Image (cartoon, rainbow, N blue to C red; front, side, top):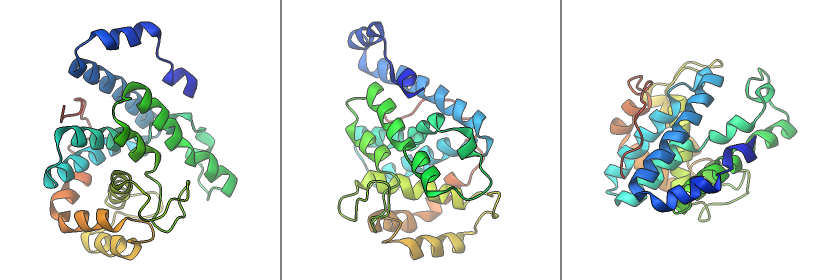
Length: 229
């Protein structure tokens, strides 16, 4: 399936070379949003999740006064980092019991699938590609690639934390949503092991701006393409 998703016909690549770059970006985003919607329909518990993470990433980009290209890369990574889950069997994604180490290793390759897809459509956005590939890395070296603090791209660490924050702020089958104080405690407890210190510092310092975005239901039906073109 991954080969099908990442196969760009030569006519499409010629079209990319002949079109206005901004228009081409927008068209690529629209195609990826369709895939993201397919993923959400396949796994209903993900409905609206990636629009919320993207919106939170844009809040951070604004807070940090990122330049437009950096903000665009962060938005791309935030919205599309899990598209590779489309290539993971339902038997694993919907399993009600704990995954075995072998099953977990199969699920973890989704970031590589996501990377291949985004890199195919946005070869000029290598910061986004890196953020997607490494968004499950941990400072303690226990992530899929074993990267440690100082080797993990900052954008990857930020996406990983925003993904966790979105999960904390919503009900899950095994637990209710966490309240603000519980979220602060959870992030603080895992900073340096699961979360990059830089990412935690930014998120905790501006949690009152970020938390309403990741916990909101207002973005559930968001269809528009990414901003920061």
